Length: 165
Image 1 (cartoon, one colour):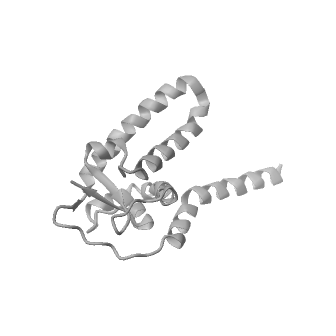
Image 2 (cartoon, helix red, strand yellow):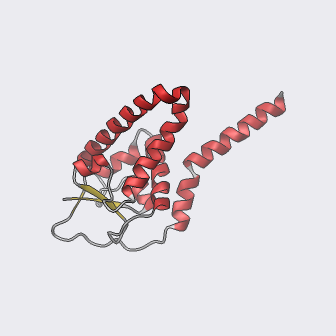
Image 3 (cartoon, one colour):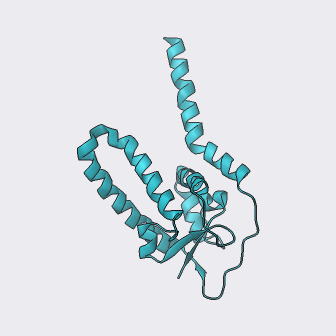
């Protein structure tokens, strides 16, 4: 019985490490550090309130999709919600439009340091790093309002920026 509890504790710690810290470590090790390109006169960084509005729109979309799918999949929806949310953000942000539906509604695009398109894997690291931004009272998100480039902790880790028209 003791061995079973010890094994469960080991796997729980491994899972927590994988979810919270492995994406951060991979982002910091694998993303090449480049200087941030300056904004043109027409561009501006997307601020806290516009990014919050886009996030609320995306959240509503994901809640509606999750609610509908919960009737089909039942309790399995808990795992599917994480997968659907991850794919929603990563696939849409790595597309040509560089934005989710909420970001499109607020005229926000996501870029790398040189205003280039982001890869699927870099955005995957960013997605899981957003969980770290939420750990301590959402401080990683509130940083957006005070950072010169309007970056949250997850944006700094993945070296991404958001611009708004």
